[in-house]
Image (cartoon, rainbow, N blue to C red; front, side, top):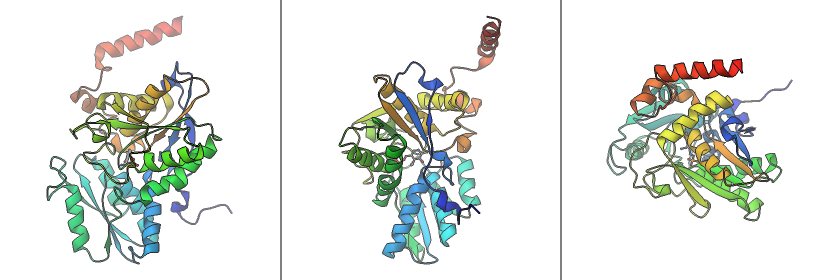
Length: 338
Ligand code: PMP
């Protein structure tokens, strides 16, 4: 019989898939690391496993304990799955810009969710950082993984994502592109690839316009899971060679193209990372291999990025409208006839 003891044995070892149509005209090979193949549907399963196992080993998390974490959803899903399999309780604190789809997923896995306002400063008592600190103080047996400062976050990528990419590309990867949220993915994966290649692999961070990583002041943007208004310690500033800032509009339009043209139904931070990867790949040649990491699935964004009305309301849709649809039909009819 071939089976796994638990769903959490399936974390990691995600596939690499070539980007074809969105990379048309580019001579470099552009490959996507598709992280929605993780059991919780995102890259964050990797850090959940490693942070929990390290806390068990150090005694910070005791049998029957409660995990309390501010999370935009994906880290929560990873923690919730690993926690339930190992017998822990979870309380998550989310900002209110997170879609209700994502919050309902956390509750489905058995976690408790507390929703906080986005429009307050991080030091405000109602900010999701402060609410989670208060919950940790008030809950007996509570442990806060704190993905923003936990060294096991980048370490999980140093020990899994990085080696996987090196092996999957047979050491031919030349550029690695990832969105930056906590900074764990880019710092851990990027550091491993630099170590493995004697510094040859170039590491590029993708960041929403307005976020601090690309020199912004922390003004709001709509892409979820990436960008910050402070500098987390999980982010190692010495790893990225370059940071590319991408607008919400470009991010979301590319996210929709990935679903329509590559069959990849992924989240908005994936579209953002692909825009950055293609900007980098445009300047490269046929021997270059660019890998872009796609953190999650598009299922959590059906009522936003994949909803025409929502896109139209924010002015993110150039396509659409009756005239555009008619022109599209005519163009396709024309193509069939010629
Ligand atoms: N995209 C999404 C959807 C995320 O949830 C996260 C994690 N916050 C990231 C990208 C960024 O990954 P990291 O925290 O490792 O920088």
